[in-house]
Amino acid sequence: MDAKKLQPESLAAQALGWIDDKTRAITPPIHVSSTYLRDPDNQYRSGRIYARADNPAFDQAEALIAALEQGAQAALFASGMAAATAVFQALAPGDHVLAPKVMYWSLRNWLMNFATHWGLKVELIDMTDPAAVQAAIQPGKTRLVWAETPANPLWTVTDIAATAQIAHAAGALLAVDSTVASPVLTRPIEHGADIVMHAGTKYLNGHSDLIAGVLVSARDDDFWKRVKTVRAQLGGTLGSFEAWLLLRGMRTLYLRVRCASQSAQRIAEHFAKHPRVEAVLYPGLPGAPGHEIAARQMQGGFGGMLSLRTKGGEPAAVATAANVKLWKRATSLGGTESLIEHRASVEGAGTPAPPDLLRLSVGIEDAGDLIADLEQALAAALP
Image (cartoon, rainbow, N blue to C red; front, side, top):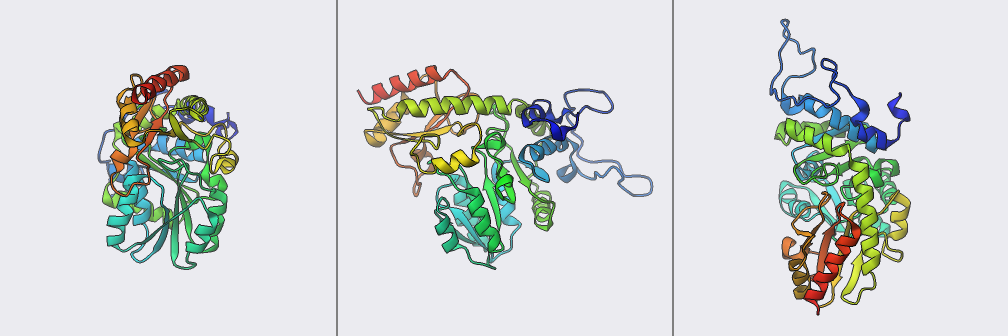
C-alpha cells in the first residue's frame, strides 16, 4: 500500500514498513561501521563515506520523523541541545534573532551566553503576543524567529501561523520547538514553520533511556544544507544504537502521547479548583491563556505536561514533591513514568518559574493512581 495514503499511526507503528532488503528482517539491523569502502575507481557510489554524516542507521528514523511532520527532510543529532544550537549556528555573526522569554532553560542560557558572545543579536520577547513579535522583528535584519509551544514550564502557547506570517513578511525563518506537542498533536510545518525541532529524548523516544535531538525542515534549501553541514563539522551526531532506540520508541508514539494527554487533562481538571492548589497551568483548561489557539493547532489533546502552583509557596511545593510515592522526583519529560520536580530549584536565578511551581510530566500510569498520590502528597505538605 502507498505509504502516503496511510494514517500517521500506521506509519509510526510499522516505522514506515521498511524491510531489510538482504535479510527480510522487520526490525532493522544496527549499523556500527564508522567508514565505508571506496570503489576501485576512487568513487563512493554507495553514497556513504564516513558515519558522522552518512550513517545508514539514521535513514529509517529520519524518514519516519519527516513523514510524521510532513517535512522534506529530517536530521538526527546527539541531543536536543545539539539540534537546537545547530539552527542558530547556521546563521552568521551579527544576525538578529527573536526567541521567547519562556522557553527551555538550557537553550535560553546558551542563547544569552555563547550565542551572544559568538555574535548573534538575541532578543527575548513574549512570543505568545503577535503584536510583540511584530514590534520586535527587524525586516532585513532578523534572520530567525524561534518559538516553543507549549513552552516549558508555564505551558504558554504561541500562534504558529500568525508568527510564521510575521517572520516571513520580514524575510526571517520560523523554527518551532515542538517537543511537548510532538507530531501527534501539532505539525508546525502545516502552520507555516520552516524548521521543527524535537528533543528526541522526550516523547519521540518515550522510555527515558536515550539522549537525542531531531530537526525537520520544510524544504531541502540552502539553509537546511548549512544546518546539516554544522552537524557534520561539529560532530553532534547520534550513535547507531541510539538511532535504533529512537526508531523503536516512535513505534508507540501515538499510543503514549494520547494516553498521557488524556491523563494530564483529567489531572488538570481535578486540581483546577483544589483547596491546596493556587493555580493549574495547562493549555487544555478552558479559560487558560492560549487555550483557543491551542485548540486550533493541537489536534487530539493538549499534551502530557502541566504545572501546579501550590498554596503555601515554595516550602509547600518542595514538601509536596518530597512526599509523592508513585510520581518520580526527576528531571525530564515524555517518558512512560510520571515525573515531578520543583522547577525553580532546577533553573536557578532568573527563572520564569514561580517558586511555588511543580512541573509534572504525566506518563502512562492509571490517572486515578496519579491523582491519589498527588492528593496525599499535598495533604502531607499542607495539613
